[in-house]
Image 1 (cartoon, rainbow, N blue to C red):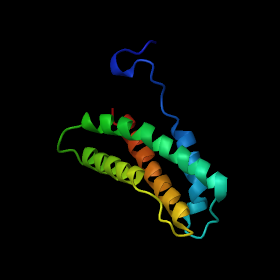
Image 2: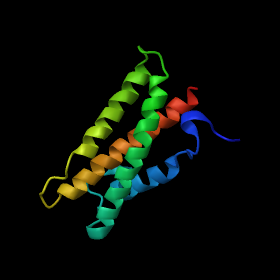
Image 3: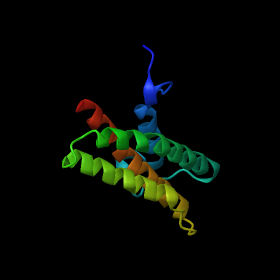
Length: 124
């Protein structure tokens, strides 16, 4: 099946891979004491998280805007998109733990956007 219009040539998002990347940063159960990645691995994961967010945020926004203006799922999804965009514009704190904390914030908002993406797709 060939896609047309604004979806032409667009591949579906790999939400499983996005969640797996977030899990690498957050560790089991999103525990604050989980040993984080460091150095180049952290830089790579942070870049990957940012890329995932840049892909999924517009998709969630488009899907949410198809809902009724007074819809609670629409409001929540759009708030999460705004949160993700804010985190993408932010910079890590220069403290020793700043880059890890930043990556974890990105991972948490990515997980939330994945939830919204799946819920909005199910609600079609």
